[in-house]
Image 1 (cartoon, rainbow, N blue to C red):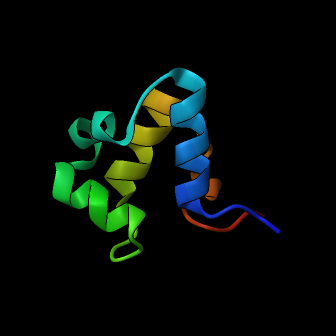
Image 2: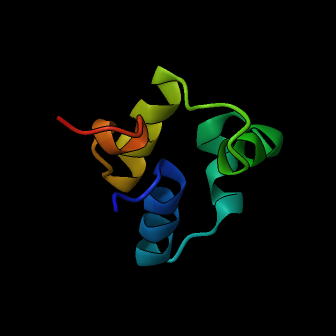
Length: 67
């Protein structure tokens, strides 16, 4: 079973010694970070780009599908 975007981000945070709180600056605040992890709102293109740049996660994993 393929991991969810949330699981991928959590894994990369752990690998880099970061926490979800560290994501607020890249995702637009703590409430937006919470909405992503709770499945309320998907990531925007800007947020996907920021996570790709900072955590090295391929965009297709953050969008929830792969080719």
